[in-house]
Image (tube, rainbow, N blue to C red; front, top):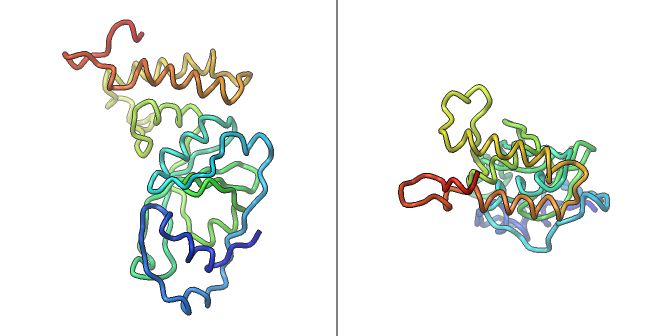
Length: 208
């Protein structure tokens, strides 16, 4: 399905938390199309009907966590019209590695070439499934220390990293279903999220 600027005009309020007023005649002059893609049955698992306003990082990371083989992309996009025209906006999306992308805000799949052209998207970082789990467990899916920054990891982050890897060798292995992986992640997050710390600011020993 080809979605032109008229589609964007009607959906712009949902995108990245931006609320922009456009001139309809300027919008309709654009010829760039955003083409929706048909996902496989496996890719469509877990996709919701909701729109997740200003939650691109979390929703993209969650999708990659639940779908082995997908890559989490952190980068930038630029609006084409209105007061925010040409403003660079930090954004996250999913590269499905087969010519399609998944947008976590809209919970829709698009042809990669049309998505990148429409949003003038530029990639900055790419993350694996394990990286996505780390981001989610740390509670901030927009940030992650690179391996070259490992010396700056806190003791808490090092223990998170170790526990995440152990889960991927066990209940989060490729043989587990999406639901099983999600359940395992929730157990992991409950055990290791900073909110489980005791009054002294340390994680309870039972968490490990």
